[in-house]
Image (cartoon, rainbow, N blue to C red):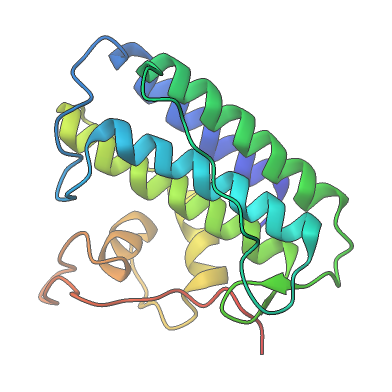
Length: 188
């Protein structure tokens, strides 16, 4: 996956959530224990952390940093922070050498960090829209890219439905909802 995919995912999140910034974001985000606000802050944190990993290139762990979004940030502010963090990740992906490797449970390439950023953005947009009562479905092309990079063992089928199943968010046909899962961002 590429920087353009990171930008597309963040733009989609902003598109669907911007009209709902006046709603109550203290409600739970779908089936999560987090609120919609906390879930959005988590997305911003992950995007920034992936950018830091890719530019710092640590080989054996996460850099000791965290993004702290101020408690008085509005939902509109959060969407701006997410867009900024996505921009930083996209810039890191664009400027990294293709053979760069940074730690994410093993050596991960720029495309892996882009895929994780897209996955976090799409999955948590779904969680937030569920909490806010909005009807939304992730773009199939982006979901297919995430599946191709992070879930090589994914079954065939509609990429949106398969991604939701692979990440424990929904049933897939007669397959029960998964209770444990992990993606494979590390290479080799």
